[in-house]
Amino acid sequence: MQQSTVTNMRTGPDGKPVKETYKTRAHGATGKGNKVVDRHQMYENTGTGMQKASHERMLNDKGRKVIKERIGNNINKYDHFKGMAISDADHFDSDWNRVAG
Image (cartoon, rainbow, N blue to C red):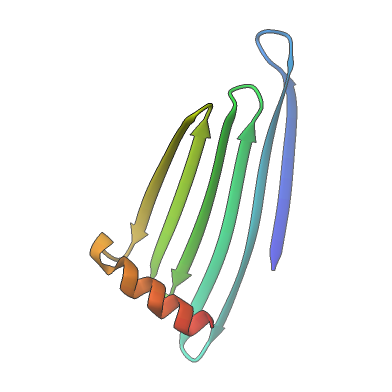
């Protein structure tokens, strides 16, 4: 497993400190002809109040990434797909769980 955290401090336009934090945690494996990756990412900005988190799963050449974004009371969720259509999402999740076990 690989993990990293980066924090950046600066002064905002109002003179107050702003902290930006980036975190990533990922692990992957290959075996039986498959490559599996599981990655979590997080971003936070105290100046804007933005919080963003994502969870990405890759199985060979296909993948799914779910991003949740929050600014104040506004929450948005995005799904991104690589090498497949949205209609393949449930099948991909089943295959990923079976292979990653």
